[in-house]
Length: 379
Image 1: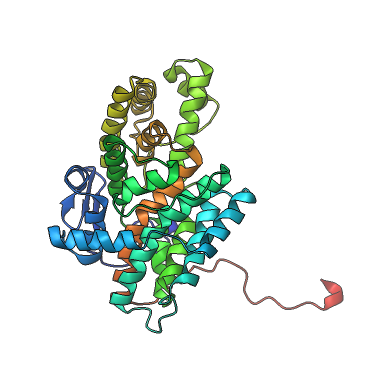
Image 2: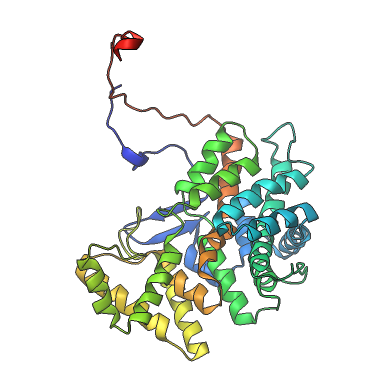
């Protein structure tokens, strides 16, 4: 088979999409024509979901109806709670638990086995169910492993605020709710990253949406995709525990051949625009708490890596300290990434269904040919 080999499909165009645009040289991210900084500042996660799934920002009536419908799907069936409780008791890892729970949700959806998997209206209903219940199953699992009871969702809170309420058992203040909502907006979509492409490949076989999202969760669980945010926070805690200057700690780590988490990106050649926004949020949370340690440590590391390695931080670098200052357990960072990115996964699956072609790349064969089969006793 002739042709240039593109390992990892780097630079290969496989589809057309109206969902998100990335300019890696300018450090720009756009959802359906809107700059990510404007969306993060001026819209909610619910508005971004509507934008991604329907192609336009909702007016007030559309947003109210959509938010109400989404909230109506938040609560969990007893069977799903039983699965979450069992996974917590078995000390399953959070991403593995989320993968299993997302798959289990289909058992309680009467439309899960709808004959036409490409039916847009049915899929939009599935989309609302999956997106509304993913934060609920994650919160339930997190509480069960702490030995606490399930907190039923509130219909009166936003998508972001309700997750924090179900996780912690108390309504978050406005600053925390707004910060978490902004984080969800920033992570909602990002082109054909590995997990999104995984969902599209699954959908291209005309598998159902639950299968596609489950595939995406499994893909996100890999350390080269979704685990960097947790690794950043573990690094920051190691720096803090060492009582060393952050710059010296990083210098020593690099000399040992270790990789500093949260830097570099497959697409961006400059600072990730989402990192800029989350850096500001991390700073604001530190100021509000009267403790700038995590933010100042992050800035020192960013400046050193930029000067010594010419690398800029990605979205994971500042999401780590932002989530930590919100009191979220470190091993929930990647599942929270999934809770946000599910909006983009679903949007790309809907696009795939609208103009489907089975995704089936080929590999260049480099093995032996024309071998003779030896007798069994001669092998």
